[in-house]
Length: 373
Image (tube, rainbow, N blue to C red; front, side):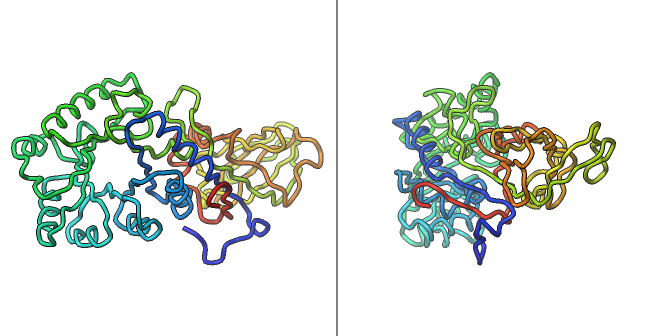
């Protein structure tokens, strides 16, 4: 989502740098880990906040040929960007949308037998064998054919007549927790569902399940968050490269007496004379308010703690111990990056790295580096 008048980095209060080479390299690593399965890319939610207009072409350039989005409007946007790739829409085939899917060569993920019937009817009417992906629920209980519908389909495969079913997919609920017993249950249910639909290819793994082993790879993997640097193996070293760096501009440096409070609610007081740097970033920029008094910034190798609450447009950091002259108005401090990753921020905010990335706001000047920038 760009601005009509792109900001220069000099005019911007904050700068978000996105490394397209790192995204592409992460895709290659996942492709190699899952080979010989095909590796798709999930670029929903504006490529997890990083910008689909730049990210999707960079992935296509290194060989990704199948992309997943969440909604039809995301699919249309991606089709306009990349006329030749395959685009699958996870949200499925809502009433009245089938002609649009056919017109723009989008692949619906069919989530119930009503959608299967709707897609068959449209394809029969136009004489096309419409490509589709069939989603069978194996325990997530969000989208997909429920067990009764899956059983009905297994008993009557003619329900798929006239359709080009590219894959049968499911989605795991607990893949980021390898020891969770639901993983084995879902895997067994999926294998049974595939066995009842002979000749069709399977897709089970999103980012984390790629690392559960070859048994989970089937014919297609669908990484999303891992492409953008989120750790798909929580509790272990992150096998992915970081893709974002967020820097906030210093507006003011001020001295504070012992006993003085900082920010709304006077939630934190100095127990010694100190120095505060006020940064032009806040929760309106997606820097979550739940990071109040809990996050870190970095400047020239120094780690500085947040002091006070996150407000709409401003953050305050304790720079008391930094060398004189290191923090100056107009300078930049690193809010997210290699030293304080989106996963680190998520831990301190009580959320997940996905939310940190997809919350990144539109007031940043976005700077893309790497191929395709």
